Amino acid sequence: MTNSNVRVMILIVFGCLFMPFAAQSQTPSEPNSEVIEAEISPPEQTVDVEAPVRDTEIAARLQRILESTERFERPLVRVDNGVVFLSGATKRKEHKQWAGDLASKTQDVVAVVNKIEVDEGPIWNFQPAKRELVELWRQMIQAAPLFLVGLAVLAITVLISRGASRLASHFLLRGSKSDILRGVIQKTVFVLTILLGIYLFLRISGLTRIAVSVVGGTGVAGLVLGIAFRDIAENFLASILISIQRPFRLGDTIDVDGNLGVVQKVTTRGTVLMDFEGNFIQLANATVYKNTIRNYTANPNIRIDYAVGIGYDAAITEAQRIARNVLETHAAVLNDPEPLVLVEALGASTINLRVYFWVNGREHSKLKVKSAIMRLTVRALEAGGVSLPDEAREVVFPQPVPVQMLESGSQENQHEPSAVQQPRHLLEDDTQVSESEGGLRNEAEDIRKQARASRLPEEGEDILEADPNTDADGLES
Image (cartoon, rainbow, N blue to C red):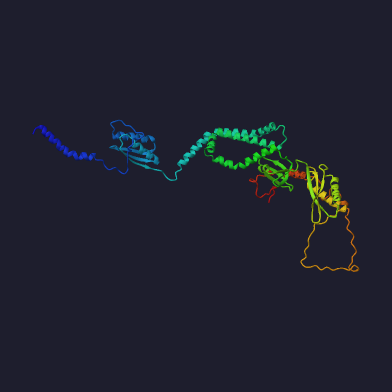
């Protein structure tokens, strides 16, 4: 054999010997269950290393990145044939996932084995709460100067609000005498000034954005406030309309929704009355504005009427003249408009007359004058011989009633005819004012005196701070 043939034979023998080992090294091994295969799609971001790439360079690069993040404890990176093995510990699962994604996106990495342990710590861990408290305290210290400046501005606004409200009412209502409208203007300017101070306080303190984001972002706060303050806003607007239209004044006697009384006070919320029993009545302004208001003081003249029944045997014209004469001679009855006595109805046993007359309601009491006129009319009709019979009554007897006829000549059962009862002329009843009627003066002045001597409901002691062992007058129970 020649030398060339010998060399060929030697290469064939060595090839046969090392063929199995080369094939075994090229056969891919079964992947471990913990190995994360690299995504087939190209990663969004890769970590480049210098070519030719070696496992030590990949491991060194990833090791430096994990250590620089300070998210891992004892991080260790090992690379073997393109497979990255990660170990160490971290406190969050997101950090472990991030490390695996980082390794998988590194150049020439075929798989990742992520053995990083997640140490979430004890269940009762107060460190996050402590950090939040420290951060909150730091923010409070930093915001303290702005907060103090905002409080100073708010205090100054509150101090000047009362003066501003008085000046506004003085200039706007220079020619008006309405106390109600003046009070509404003062309170409106006062509230607007306070709202301006609150806005400046929030703006200086840096809380304006928070309030606007809560109200404008969700809308829940605006809805809740709208529902809660709907009645308050309605009463406030009603107070303004009442002040502008002025259907009554302080001290007037009015009737609203069946409540009769003297007006004591009108606030932005309601109207305070004192009825003729001495009780305070608080009516919401919306109720006052929506219901019918009957003012007994705006027009001083009040018409009073009552009915009186005379017999069918009486002269109607004479009875009318007698009743009218009583009205014309009474000092409390007005001659203009003139009094009237009209036939109203024909009853079963009486002819009913209706008497109309007018009095000055500011000076005289309607009830007292009516009582005096009725008393004088009855006595005058009796003195004039006008019969005032009772209403006819029907009596039904369950058993028959025996009737005994008396002989005309019998003396034992005859009685002397009784004297006809003459209408007595009562001098004590012909006076225009009796002691029982207490004078004809209007009792509204008595109500005003009682109101001045009493306290308004808003002037009492705060019920939240009052001692439960004391009564309304401050006496021990």
